Amino acid sequence: MKVRCQCKAVSFETPTPAPLSVYHCHCTECQLQSASAFGTSAVFPAAGLFPLAPDLQAKLGCWTRPAQEGRTLDCYFCKVCGVRVMHRIRNADGKERSTVSIKGGLVEGLRYEGAKHIFVRSAVVPIPDGVEKFEAAPPVMEGRSAEDVGRSTEEEEGQRA
Image (cartoon, one colour):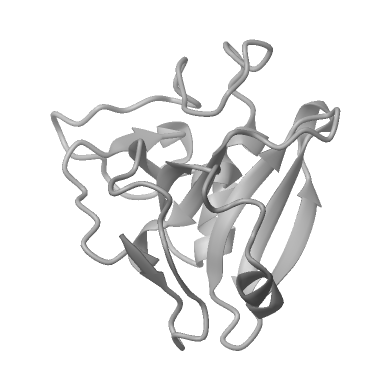
């Protein structure tokens, strides 16, 4: 799938032809980051994208914010237009997760059917009936290690949206 930022300076192909999952995250971190009611992320394997190619890395800035449990969140954005492109969690030991969350609105042809709504406890818009939804982080999520399973901290939410 093709990914492009708003000004098209950042452009790349996803590592797989379809995402592992799509999430609409309603956490307060995603509300702040997206300047909207929620953020949408398409989760892909990081392999094939990371390490970033030198030409792509040159076009991206990275803001890293602290997260709970000693983790950090690497937030990549276009250096030209400032659009957030993707997120990747680093565990407390510095190890990067095996997945990357790419901002849904940047993925051409992304399908939203079956998207999961997460951190709905912070939702400021109604959640549609009949969708899969979770008060916090779902119990199973791509890229989460065994040590993360069962946690539903606010820091997890910023990865997806």
